[in-house]
View (cartoon, rainbow, N blue to C red):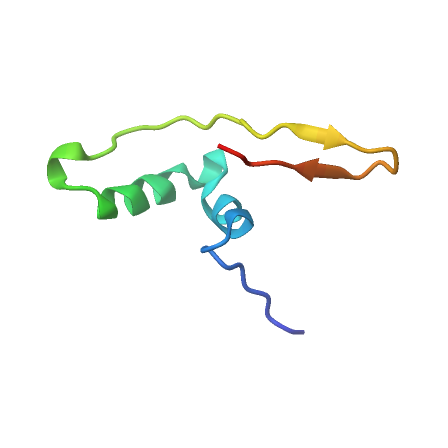
Length: 66
């Protein structure tokens, strides 16, 4: 079987690794490693801000234009 890797530098990869409630501690640790000690994150919440557009052929597109 061939190994598969997720690229964390893409939008899809980052959200796949860090974008779920179960991964909250990992995301907090990652963000805290980038921040100064005085600005540490203790908790965060997830918000689904991606609109889903349904097309005729039942496929959907995600737009992330923030």
